[in-house]
Length: 388
Picture 1 (cartoon, helix red, strand yellow):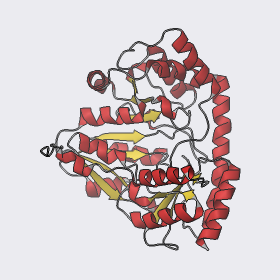
Picture 2 (tube, one colour; picture 1 turned 120 degrees about the horizontal axis):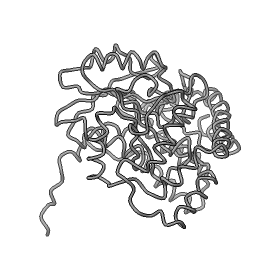
Picture 3 (cartoon, one colour; picture 1 turned 45 degrees about the vertical axis):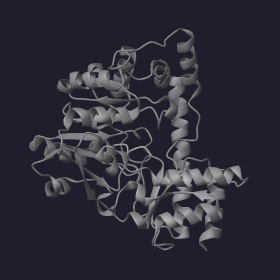
């Protein structure tokens, strides 16, 4: 018998997604002939827009298969900078943009250059679960702050004042957020930036759902200051999930550090994906993406009142992303057990709150409206029968 293999202690704190167990069960049911409506995974159902796909094919045929600089293809950094200027009204120099393998790559780089062992990062609970794991990977400590509808599930300066310690080096917010779809407006971001700067810390703003905003300003924290980190991605609004491409807008004095770490962690993001992404900003592609944004808005406007009518409590109307996060205690005190039964009995896959933190996690579930309207109508019909 082989001796036990040593595993790093940090792995005890890094949890898998609970929803992946549900997804695996859903796949088994589908293999048995069951029809399952997937509202659990945060991936748009739309294919990558044709102009991007065609640009990727051309790049491969042209031999664009070698490494780019670690900070990314210069032409793509310039295209993103123009996007910030022309669409978002932010003056962002291309030199401050670092292209990464997905937004996850951007978050790893930022945590890697900011954190020493024991340093703390303040973030929301509920929130995207990987954020706390990125912190733990670099031997830091995520400080999860319970948030609720009274602050639109967002951090405030008052939260930071209560939870900031001598070990805190950064605060992280998401707008639009996962799982709640709420926004942090310009005034709130300004308050958070003022607080973190006053404490000598950093503000990290996750904007990977930027572009998928239905009410309010479709802006960017990058317009406020050069002294913060803004994370974005080609996965959500641009529909390039499998291409694995994102970026970070960083303070100028941090770009060299990000460059060094990127060289050592992954050399560079995918070259064909970077060439393909150049087409994302063309008028033809932006027209497609705007139509899809309106389709997501229509889906939200159907599913939100339908779920409320069934008894799911969604206290805040999400203004962005493609999620509905609500209190499910009218049906069960255990959201994971509810999600299991919903899958097995109704054939509808949803995500339990356990994937997003600890705060009221067993009383909440998330629905991703990433399927077209006829499928959502079918899901609601099944849920109506199941819940009643």
